[in-house]
Length: 124
Image (cartoon, rainbow, N blue to C red; front, side, top):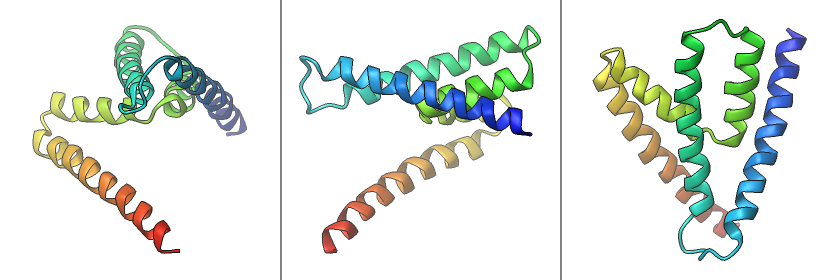
């Protein structure tokens, strides 16, 4: 159990650093009217989780390495990659209605909570 926790922690630290470096790169010379860095990490993470998941289906990769990469590294780099793969996997498995509900629910509720939290903080 402790090995799994360490794998996630180390991967999470590495993913957080990579995300920060990506933000530093995109902050230079780019307008701040569009979240280019966030878009970049989300799209890169989405591609990587799909690519690596497919690659790992073809070869044995230990559960510890999978935790390090998927939960730690990519989970910290971006959680959107997991969200994107979940939607894709639901569609692939024939759960189209659940996938659409998850897609719409996550976006609508997530944005609503972000806006709600913002406005609640302004009341304090």
